Length: 187
Picture 1 (cartoon, helix red, strand yellow):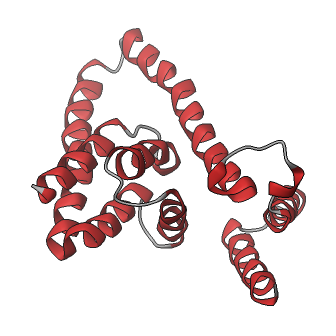
Picture 2 (cartoon, rainbow, N blue to C red; picture 1 turned 180 degrees about the vertical axis):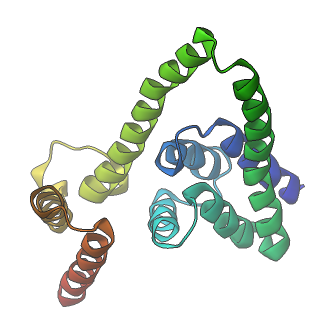
């Protein structure tokens, strides 16, 4: 039954996560934290961090990680297949439709209509991770003492470095991780 739940949960994530990995984060969070309680919010944030740092799409990395955590190797295989299968089916159907009807304005309209929804999903995921980093699991608070100043400072510096010098985001992530780890080890 657990394997079936893993498959179905990640099948839904794979089916409805349009717009890439960042757009899938709210869907993954809903399934594994809110609905099934397989991970806590803190564990979920760690999962997203690890999934971002490892090669491959976030949803597939998340499926593999959660699958192993819940049901071992069979869970990882089932969750990963559940995540990938909808994409294979949808892409095959859409490729056939697109090449057959690509000149229709309705197809162009559908693609244009999906763009704002994808941007909002990405913004929602970013806001959730930002709020967790700044205020913790308790969420937004007007109490200034609840703010994690190290996270705010690292965010501001990373954003400044990315915008000002256009550094490779991987280097900025590595630097933030090293600096953050050093600060937390000293405190």
